Image 1 (tube, rainbow over the protein chains, first blue to last red):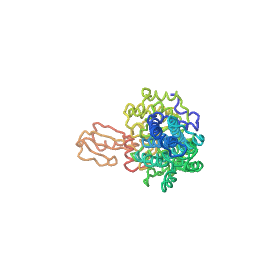
Image 2 (image 1 turned 90 degrees about the vertical axis):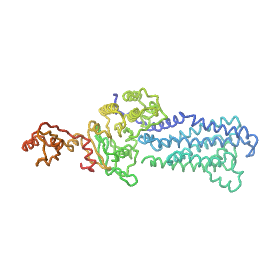
Image 3 (image 1 turned 135 degrees about the horizontal axis):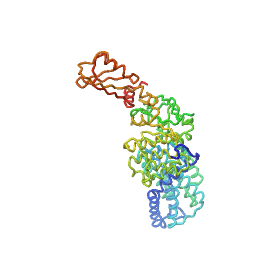
Image 4 (image 1 turned 180 degrees about the horizontal axis):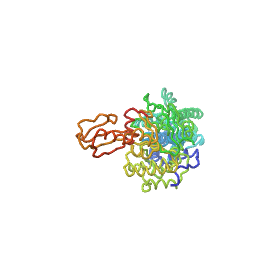
Length: 263
Length: 306
């Protein structure tokens, strides 16, 4: 035996890069579920709203409906997949007990959050990117401020990665976890301005829409691409950033304290 | 030399119910230390507090001089843990999981060491299988390989051979002894008391969250076990003769078999003299030394007296 007790040099960031690699490999190994399915769903939306209705209706002056709806669909893919990656991976680990393998290692809470978050953001970015590539078959976007659009997409994926971590920690079973997606995120996305501008709604629905945090993410992203939105980009970015910071603090507290992870 | 593990006044309660109460003990470097106790004694809770799965209510744990809360990264990289429950990740094959696992501990994957573990634990033919397709014994062996992949200084084995067949169990214990000879300290919990007796340098017995015994294995067995002397008599007795009360006598076999209990520190000669004085004709006799199992039952049934 070459020696069981002679540890090599400790590389403080290796636990983080390993966990990140594992998380990316995890969704890559089941790419048909994690990447292909959301891309097919987005493609169907694009076909319905791009090929059939896109040229016939317009809800925003100067743009056809396909151009209006594509930024929302891209953002929907980013949000859904960032959330799903974190929530399903961490919850499965908790549910099947594999989390203990991680809890006994020197992975720090910061590394834990960062690795899960970056993997989720990568999956969200991949789905968003492919959705955009497919959308070019149906409409050309003006890309008014591409860097700001990327910034909003990054913010959205970060925010929903944090929410995914929080949901995975609080969920007691698969039903509870799916409720976060089906009864919270999905309605908020649909009512957050993916398919219509808030400005066409009458009171009180238009006012209520301002309480929907997803409205700011979607509108900010669309604003950066089309150059127009229901609210200013600065307001959309500001509200989204505040929300992202709040959720990050919440997730960091949960993971740092080991709440529901360590008994 | 720093203690491999130092536990001081450790307590933990779940929902107001104490699981570990004011527990203190040390493990020396290079030891094989057995932590035994009935189900619910607090062994796994103690191990989980050492490894970081479970939060500490009060008390302190240090591993090789590092506090496991304030210096958790230093302590955890020195520990390898084989959990009681089988922990698997079905997304990866054995080979992938092993190479990933070293990285969690901040150690570069060492292919030579990984191969050695694969060979010694006979995992070679199954490297490309996902864990769902492995047998129970194979999963146990994989968990041991995983716990050793970063070359820990203290290996914690929480019921590592539960549900494993006899042959595999013996193989695993041989391997553990070899790991120990190479310098790895081992903390072991097991329900196989005979193996604990053979493997462990020292044994701690817990009951109801408290330590009820902690001694070198031989001392513990010697001090607390009893010898039984069975006598086959020439002529049957109707009652137990007076003068033998101290030996807790029992008469069986229609009065032909007399069973006496001797403290381990008492020789048999004195008793034979007594029997001779009572004019008891002895045809044959047999002595039996109780082992760790009897000591364990004695301590955990009575509530403990160390």
